[in-house]
Length: 282
Image (cartoon, rainbow, N blue to C red; front, top):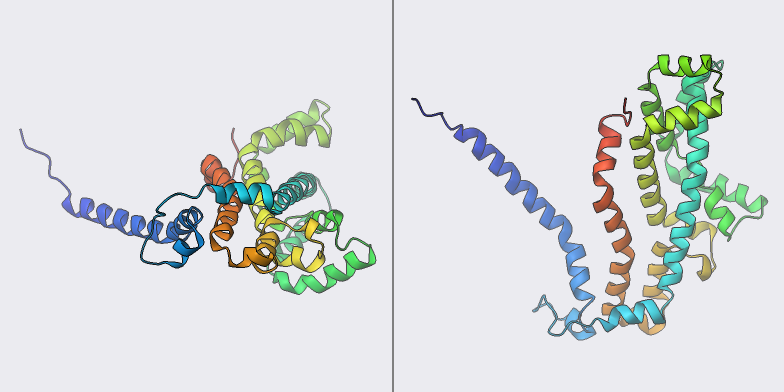
């Protein structure tokens, strides 16, 4: 009985790929690891590059951040604005995508291409006209301005359109023959069949809004309205003594990153599935 030939070239190639990917992951994750470790050090230990680990973990840094700093308020603002933006984006993007995908509207393809074209426009170009619009509406420096100015996502429209296109047209026609209206078809048939894409859209929208910095900094000035990215900058440069307490700054950064890390770890399979298989299940 002959022994199988071991494909050494394939084994070596896979091992090399795993080594490269492992090294890349370590390099990518090292800044966060260093920040998390530094958050448990004293100020003197943070400035001392000779030691990586703290001599005695300073868990009081986190107590100080959560109890005696405005960071919890910044986190609450980010969660509130992100959830509100997600709710509005879901309604707007789902309705628009359903219209261009299933309704016989004249010029729907041209309208869809025009919307996608706006995705190619640099975001910075839209800052001035959007700022003027919010100013005339009296929505500057307000939660309403932060939320409504992000009420539509072109990427969300594209992602949902790809998923909607994978829904069999026979299913839609059968529902119409049974007397189902547009809203009923969308909520009872389209949404359940394209749930992975909706979940992907929700997660990516949350991450994008949570990390937003430039636009909120332009339209808000009150510290009480600052999102976490703005708040960390205020905490670093405008916090008086906190600006020199690097261990507290590192603790604040760690607290800000942990929610995103938890979301990504728990939902990365949904993100990949919603993008790779167009998010439609039969």
